[in-house]
Amino acid sequence: MRYCPSSVLHLLRFVRLRSCTRRGRITLPFWIRELWAYMKLLVNSLYFNSLTDSDVVFDSVFEPVFWTVDYITRWFGSVFVTLVVILTSSVLLVAYLVLLPMALSTYSPGWIAWHLCYGHWNLVMIVFHYYKATMTSPGYPPTEKNDSPFVSFCKKCIMPKPARTHHCGICNRCILKMDHHCPWLNNCVGHFNHRYFFSFCLFMAMGCVYCSISGRNMFLDAYNAIETTYQTAAPPYTFKDKMIHKSIIYMWVLTSTVGLALGALTFWHAMLISRGETSIEKHINSKETKRLARRGRVYRNPFNYGRLNNWKVFFGVEKRSHWVTRVLLPSGHAPLGDGLTWVAFPFKKDLVPV
View 1 (cartoon, helix red, strand yellow):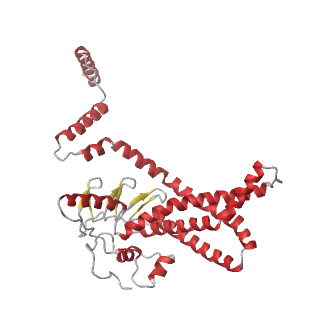
View 2 (view 1 turned 90 degrees about the horizontal axis):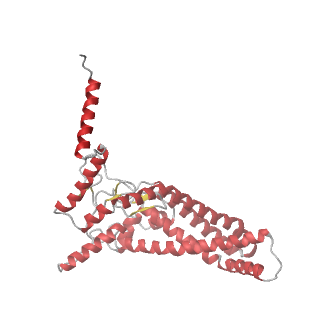
View 3 (view 1 turned 30 degrees about the vertical axis):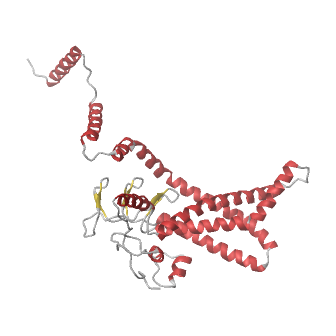
């Protein structure tokens, strides 16, 4: 009698199936049993872990939601950047094709020179800082071993974290002096591009306010013209006239809305910079202040050097001329420090000479 391994294997499978059927059990696929065992382990870990608290339970339960939001934000980043470029380009198109010819024919030479100089300076600052904010790396901790000090370990990267470093779930890595992840930049805002981000917000808000104020009378004229055409028997306008009026209304509404929203955001970040904080550190410092207050102690932000010094460190100002060359003009200089080490607690005198 010949020995056939395949026949023995089929026989064993048949016997196992018969035994499972007799006992009334249904054998599930291995991947389902493995997933079920993993879920049971997760649930049991919440009960038998002495460090478990409400935050751990919340993070565990909503981890799929966080992952979905991070994935969608990461995917839509390029869409948001494209939207910024399209909206800004549309405003420039209206300004050059509609507003500029009207200004040249109605304004005095002095006002024309003012609008041309200020408008183009503002435009250059917006384009430069937006490009640098999107293309500049926010800064990452070194992956190889080094002598840089660290304050904790990242549980996701399994890497040491220097001071002011936080993990970004969207970028899926740690960011030096992380402020937040900006979908409109499709990039994190960190140590090396924080200045570009704030300057872009500032000059974009200034540009929107400039367009809103300077175009207010044109907006009212265009709005009244359209109302007169549609609701009265006034002489009809041509298609070109209607498109000009609607373009002016579109530009004024868009710039006014963006100027209001972005102005509030810029003001908020200016307050944080004045206190030597980032958006994340604002929440951390608030919790520490309350925690120490319950113990009768006062919390001091170790990275607050005073209002003026905080702005000097943020903009990289080392002498008086830098307020012009590094703040009011496009500048690609690197920020002070490497983002790995920080000087703690305020100084009694200026950090840098002025």
